[in-house]
Length: 262
Image 1 (cartoon, rainbow, N blue to C red):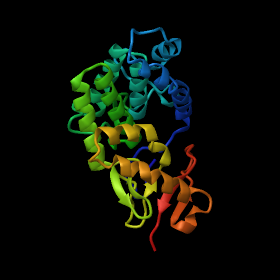
Image 2: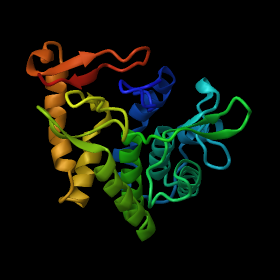
Image 3: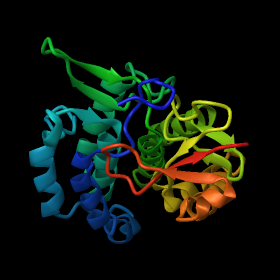
Image 4: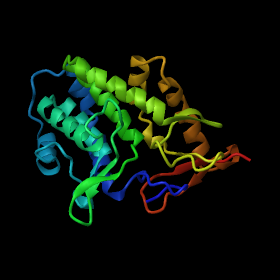
């Protein structure tokens, strides 16, 4: 799929991602149960173990069986969160290492991960779209910061800090009528001077609060504040306030937002 300026970028949400989102909703309860426990001795978690056996390859790559076993940066970041909650540091490291080696050219300190990895017609596996996905990047920064805190590992915290800084540099923009907010990706979401394509589902409030606490000088508090006008103006009738709703072709997304001036 291409964006409105014909620059390749990731789709906002594929139908195949529904199962991932359902899993996220179910397992996020563990944030209150497992993470608050301060990563005590690892306890058996059948749901996580079953997910890992079915969906995560031995090298740490999350497989999307509904799309030719492709891999997305979003799936990697979600799985890292679940590994953190499960106190499964071995799996966390495998997921992180695969992400860095294959989606970030071997170095997450200098680039955000590409969002899509898949199989070429010739049978080879490679990055299919180098554009990063900001929701995955936010979760990745959050995962690393929390891993550094809970496992007392400065390396994770340093990497999370660098990822957060690069998000702020590449995926944040001022939008008229909204304020400073998060773009869905680095390229393809501002096709002309009067149009921005936004997605409120990419702005998990608790992740933004964590980043704002860690980096009060950054844009995170402003991004969190932008969620309200995005939702308000993107609601039915919101077009009267300058933000219009636009369906996003065949992808399952409640709405995408296009702010137009003039």
